[in-house]
Length: 214
Image (tube, rainbow, N blue to C red; front, top):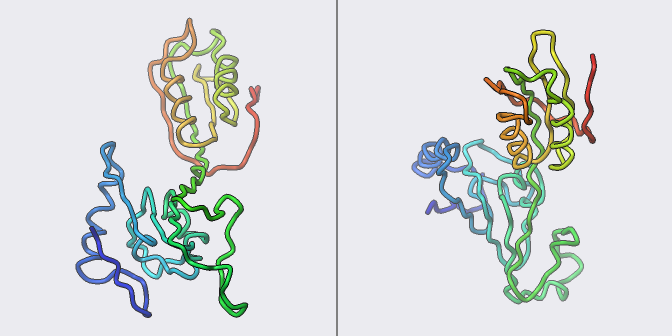
């Protein structure tokens, strides 16, 4: 475990704790990355506004907090670094506090209950630009790609390129985009995929999936 520093000063990690987090962060990119659980809020995040005085913060998969949510769990970038939030009711009489007390305004789905609640945040969208090489034109590849994208709920577009490849951009949650990429690596019946090139681009918020002819 990594102990938060607490106190009234900057929440930024210092000394040995900062060094440990800096060494652990690259491990989170691995397929066998460990599950990170934060208590109260991830160390290094400002509890009041979710800011990061220092970018060396260990992103959590789950944050367990007690009684009421800290504002830092609701504001970016703290909200994104907290992962799923579990709020545990410990019997605080928040309704009986004086009107001068500051309270965190919570979304409807964070209403209190007598048991622990998991507050699931949808994963932020990702957008991938991909190029499929092989026997991928004249085999219905574009139409099959659109059908599969619509089935998975992926937005974007697909088109043929003069060099015989198929180009597309896919936008959606990381899990469904990855499923469509897996499908592209095989393609529809009659196609032969030799190579799939892909890289991340900025999401645009587009909806629907189209076949382009430009």
